[in-house]
Image (cartoon, rainbow, N blue to C red):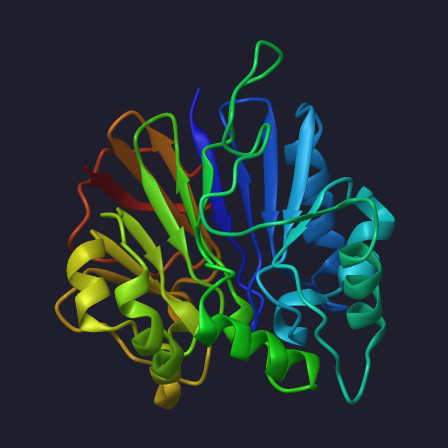
Length: 294
């Protein structure tokens, strides 16, 4: 059985899900609009229907990462809500920010932090296996992080509340998410985080120049593939020297992990890259563009 990671094409926002090989399903962030919310929620309901544990991980409460959260909760019933412990406020509160706060402050919430352990997020039991999700940041004792918490509490940007999330599939494939961490903040904490080597990296802040990863981290991560999110092209950093897929052009991206391979599919049938191997896979999750062999 293969695991599936999907990055939705939602415009200037982020939304992902992981269909684990174990009895787990994970959603990371939400960006639902009138023209996509029914389709995306129906797909999620179909993909998670046979999974015993379903969790939602919120990287941070900016609108481009929580839009449609009320609709999502209403239609799938968020059972477990994971986020960094915070007291973020907004000058102008939206319905979805209110939903975020309600979930954050409810008995459904679990606060994530560096090296936290949790059934069945990253610990197995006789009942079911682990999802393979590990939290590498935040260190809640770090002064730069504490400052970010205070700024968010005062209504400033919550970007730097974002956790660093690693997913290590049973097939051995390693993915990394970094929310909307900003370059200046990453430079301040770079010596406090030991980055692992990673196969597929989702560039922070949608791949924007304002979220460019420090060179020291890039060397540690040594990604085989960098996914650059959706943003105006003039704002993007294209990670020269690395294999990339740009979601502006590719559309939705689905990763099917199978042993030491990742079969990659996109929604734009005219999109292609040259660095993947062609294993002649059928177009089962969109248009097959090739396989990353690890």
